[in-house]
Structure formats: structure tokens, C-alpha cells
Image (cartoon, rainbow, N blue to C red; front, side, top):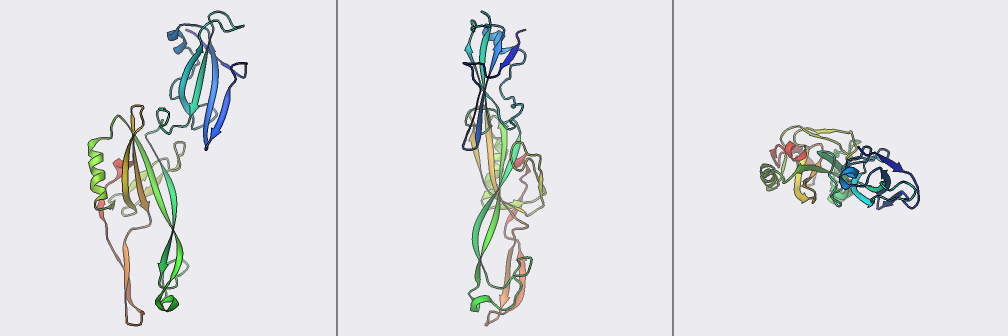
Length: 258
């Protein structure tokens, strides 16, 4: 069997590392002591499609090109050169995503109006309304959980229909949900959300062009999604509450995620 040997900077086969918009592209070259296509492809030590780079985590073999087949100067008539290109697995180049699922958290800043002064926990606790009943604005951060699940072939029909049921009207999770790899494909962090903490905001099915389909979902995650209200007298003094009411139906989302 033929053997592949890494060419490290031997001109004109110069290795490259290039970063563009935060994405690394790594190009490396190998010699193979053979010239037949089948011999070259089966060479021991030659990376294969989808292999992760040994030192640059998160980049995977996307392209393998035989650029010289036999007759490499100074290496013998039967020596060939192979160029191997690594890139991150975002689907744009057809590389297979190496994990079944991962997720990301995205903060979204908004402004909300509060009627009363708040306590140290940020909960409205005063009895006299601020600014003669006009209230005051404050910054609010909402956390959006974006989940990515990958299927070989199409997304199962049952999951697609469940997503339609979950968005109209919107639902929160009925059961505890475990979300793997929060932070990216190389993350080992796992989050657990108890019932009622995840509000489903919709899903997309994306054909990656490599035999895989991505099922991408968005959730608003929070301690709960209850509606809180109070009763007031004619002078806007609180007379009761705050009360917490359920405003969303429930559904199990685990098969959307992993």
C-alpha cells in the first residue's frame, strides 16, 4: 500500500493558513509514493474527507485534490502530490458536520417600561408608581437559544409537523430539555431547561448540499414565560398581586434539538 508523507513548506507546494471573517482555511500538501488514482486515494497517512485537523480544532477536510500525478521533480517518477484543504463545518462548502447537534446563545437587547421601583432582584416591589404613574424605561436582555440538529437526508416528517404545531400558537416546553454542545461544535457544555423555560420561536430546514439537512430552531429562554399583572386603585396604588398566569400551551421539544 502507498504511503502519504506531509510536505512541510517544500516549494512550490507551500502550505497556507488563511482567516477570513473568523473562518480558518488551512491548505496542506502530501507526497504519495504512487501514481494511480486508486493507489493515491488509499494511501496510508493521507487525511480523508471529514477528518478534523490535528491542531486547529473545528476545521475539517473539505477538499482533496491530486495536483501532480507522477514525475514530481527530485522525488521519482512514481511520486504524486495531493493538496488537502480544511475548513469549518458551516455547510457552505459541502463538508459533513461532524456532530449530531449543537447550540448557541444570542443576547437581544430591548427596552421595557416598569411602573414601580424594583428591589435588588430586579422585581417591581414598590407601591407608589414612578414619575406620577408614567413609569420608567430600563434595559432588558432576552436570551435567544439557537439550536442546530443535523440529519442524513431529509428532516423526518413527524418533526416538521410537530414544529408547525409548536408555533401556531406558540408553545413552551412541557418537559425538561437537555441541550448539548452549547457554544459550538467543539463545546462540551450542556444546558438543562425545566418545563416552561423555553418558548418556541420557529424553525428552518436547510439543505446543506452534502446529503445532510440542518434543522435550526430558535427559542426564547427565561426563568418562565408567565404573564404577571396587578390590581390598582384610582390613584394607581397597587391593591393586589402581582399575579402570575400561564399564557402559552405546552409541547415536548426534545426531538427538535437532539
